[in-house]
Length: 149
Picture 1 (tube, rainbow, N blue to C red):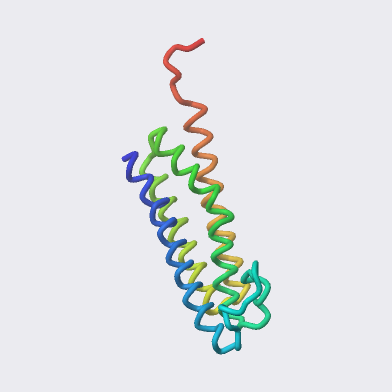
Picture 2: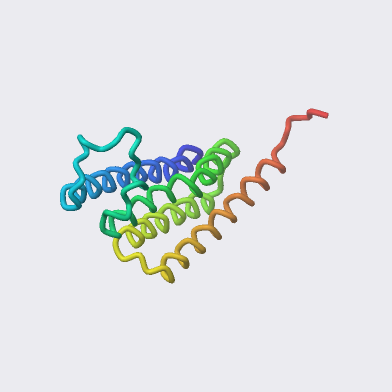
């Protein structure tokens, strides 16, 4: 069961790379339409520097990619801690629920981006992450340390 606990983390990492590819394709497709010649761009130009020249949905993908590099950085060590400590089936289900909600959040933010729905998805995923974090603390605090005094 320990390795099963790692699968949601692997899936979310893969999803993050898929979003990066989606963002890259969307951004480069939009460059031509916005009259941006990447070959003539000044050194050090970043996506945020030209965001106002691109359509909003392109920026939404960029924002979502950034979000996938924020809160999930808490998720990954929690998954590893639980995998090492011996997760319960509930932990695995909660981790998969977190990943599923983050994927739905990504798709929503990158396409429709209505804040009320996005905020509810974020709140729900955060609540699940909180439960997983509490479980990781509980399982590690209560671990048998083998008679060490």
